[in-house]
Length: 534
Image (cartoon, rainbow, N blue to C red; front, side):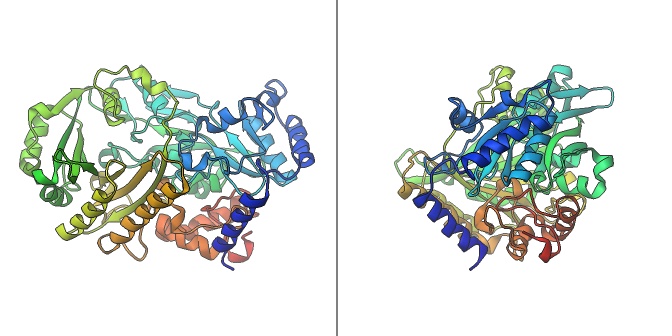
């Protein structure tokens, strides 16, 4: 039986017959918990960081940074304990004791894993939650910062702006995403055409390995450092912190949003956007976001939001747009000039004038959702766009597609420089998203099937052999293993889609740093060669 099929059977049996939380046994969990203080710093008692199902705060801590309601149901397996580490030694103790007593570890920094892999497993497991480890140390003299894995993107942006109005960092637009996983999967945002991905601006790291050792770039070696920067850090150890390189931004940037429906010529504008967005000046980033909506006349239609950022003044922006993308008809009234830090609020969907303090709010909006991704190497013809529109109009007001242009700095970095391989030759990346609020199994089936159907319908127009995907937009439909068994051949399938030719190097690094495959999940990197996988 294939590993994925056997895992499905295990899940069904679990749901039908076993209790929640999923633990080895009371005695096994008790032994694990008693083990922890023996291996941690006595000046910071680890007992203050332990939440078991008997603790009144257990459920609230578990749910606090889990934003996909698909994995917060009564039938979702629960950990035997949550270790909300407050000290490096708490992580070391969790690794040592979990390994000794046969518990799997799922590490969570922000909880935005789209398939819940950072806090759900179908074998006895512990959640190692890093939300307490979120210090950010800015050094403007060297233009660098050390950022602990539990910090959020919003907290990082806020701390940078506290110190400088002319520095920023190329990361995502959602402020509550944890830095640990964001960097581990590649990370990107509106600055990527100017400065590349988040991982392209990481210069050091601290990781705790399977033996509990704290390693930096020098002591872990260049191969391991390469692997954790975009290869999914959770496959190799527990990322404690990243050292990042701050980037220069002007004192004022311009942002804009232009909305067009199909009736207003959106199809033609998107068709032209595909041809120019990746070739525009690298200071200019324009994302196209089509959504299915109910029109004013009651008929379903598609509305495309063209959202942009320019690292410069309004006059220069309008000159560039009139010369390169006149089809959008950008006007001065569409443009808002603001500091870079305020632009992060704009991208996060906050109203103009909102206090930047909102970036410190770690509370997440929770809903049911499913996402998928694609890479586009050739302009999609109008017939292909119309195929996409048809699917978007089938379920209105609950879907979105984000088309993010590449080119600029992205086209200059080698596909093997980091594990993230999607570089030159890509016009843009697509994210397909669908969300819902009805928790019934019927609704879940309807929306997930919609997601799979739109993805299948777009196959003729996107990358192939392999059909590439973005690790941060994790999708178990691409192939997955069981919670506790990593079949190399199964991993090669999803590995090729996420990492292309970099997958085998990642597997070799895995064999060096975690040969017994302690750190694993349904889409982790297995050790190479085949016979070493477990």
